Length: 107
Image (cartoon, rainbow, N blue to C red; front, side, top):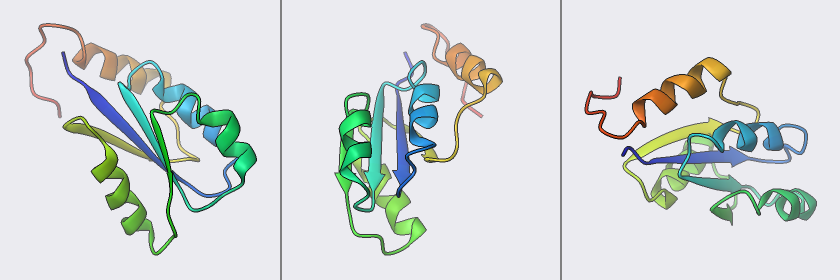
């Protein structure tokens, strides 16, 4: 079966992070969140859904993304910003690829 790591970078996205994480729950085998020392309230509520939560000093968008990928444990990584989320259509497509016995390449 295909295993997917979802990585999210965030900074003070209290209004969006819940929607982002919830959209990944059906497809991600792990969810890694990288924040830039945002509020502890957000971390307290959402960390129970994430597989891992790291706070690192923001240097650049790409540095955050690159660090997030290094924390993923699966070969396939789905990367989102906290204000993004998976549509129902995309979720269904990913679940089709994850079906046991499916051997077609992921596009």
